[in-house]
Image (cartoon, rainbow, N blue to C red):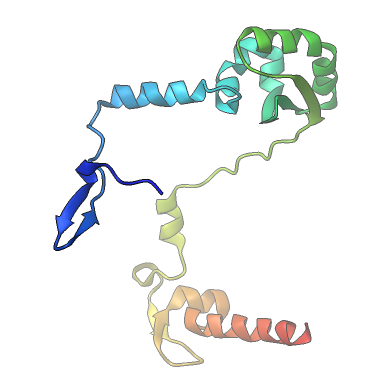
Length: 181
């Protein structure tokens, strides 16, 4: 078992107390960014390949095909359409040579169909909040017909009762399913 360096040990009574090491010196943001970029360049890094992908694959292929995974030198590339998959298969030797020439340790390419999920367009959170049923400043407040507590009218319009009663209702609906199992 090793022993902590003298700078981390403090005498305390008849023994010693282990102290945390001194924090690393503060460095500028530019140094952090350079360290991050150099870690991207590590051997076998998928991030480095992502960064170089447009110039390695060329404009038409890079916009329809993308690197998905890298394991033990095997690079998996996904194509968005069967025609692009076939184009990748035909240009596999040239693409593999370009990847290796750029210094990426890729042993072989595996090409597969890949349908990336389209990004959901997220609305403005402020607009969603303006329409939220729990807003009493917009919808008003009234007594819940089940429990009688003051509740937002938007919740009662949506579920027929307040959100607390809705929670109880949902838990009661899930209990029979749990008993059947």
